[in-house]
Image (cartoon, rainbow over all chains, first blue to last red; front, side):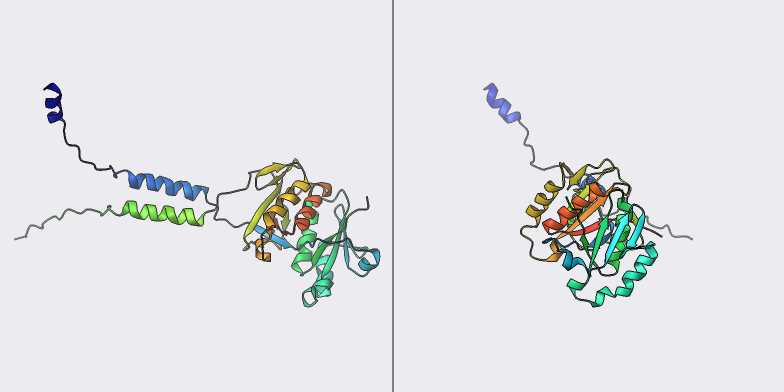
Length: 138
Length: 136
């Protein structure tokens, strides 16, 4: 009897889901995505560094070479400033040539910083050159 | 005699706010890409030729000021790890558009630190997108 009366007392709860705070949750999620998303595009230079077989001495003889010795720049063994290097590269008119003739060799000494290397790389790439890194003989 | 104006109760319709908010969430979820970059201390080199990158970046390689190398934010032991990691990433690529690798390196680092990494990227078949600051 007691249990029956208790059953009778039980209120009928309606099955509604509380949705009042949904929009708050949604906006919090939006804020999270806005903060976590990287919309900014970084500024870069594009350098095409081909991979492949090592070239022989005879093959590399006629290819223009940029040497970086510390902070000094040499183009075909002649000292140049960065502006002069850009002028020399522009004079080669690399964009009009086919891919095999657009190769510029880039050699550097151990004390060359990435700053100097980056600037040379940027100049070569800006003129349409394909950079071939010269490795030291081991 | 002035007529008494009836004041209508002004209520902003907020019933659809939740829907709008969830649509915005879906938009951000679809468009966003969670950052794979590790926030490492480095000073970027400068050049007048740097431009905003339009290409899709497939991987990010960073070298911090201490010379530690990272591939997509995870520290690696050396350039060989970069090469093999990138080879695996670029294995199924079909066009040049899918081969762009972002490269960030501290401006003061010596050649022996960064050049093997650049060579590793090239050997793996990546096109280097070297990040720098624009000289104004």
